[in-house]
Image: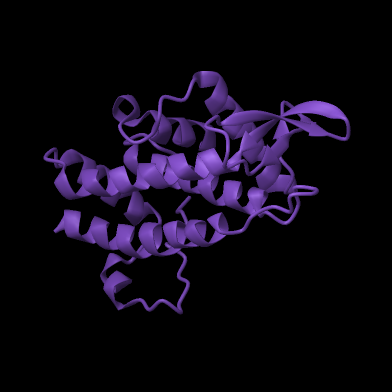
Length: 201
């Protein structure tokens, strides 16, 4: 029963909203002349906030106000079960970028504005770009998107097949903390956006 409810949550919120939105955002390509209008920042914000949510749900000790731990936990879950093997420095950069984007829209790294781009031609998570005549490291949102979409496909397989029942207890506990009424999930329509819930203090 718990597994089915969690899969309902996955189907509506992860597959329906997050994956669905990312698939649309992925079709938006930047202007080749100036790199603008590619929705790199909204795409990265969607992915990183989703990592925060999923890391919280999977971590028995996850906390709503601990985004850095949540993001790292999801990426590293069970020795990188879902993600490629990101280094600690790359994970730190992702969290730092998140801080700037969530508060000021533009990404920052250690207090300084940082580059961000979509580069379908590079397999690297961070790439060097020339911005205003200067070489600047940029988060490659194309690579981040590919890795994250792959991760949530692996997450679905894990949720469908995991034999250890304790993970379902952990996820359900967090979903209840969000005041999420799981029974309504199958009744939702595609034209309705529903907040999974407000975290309880």
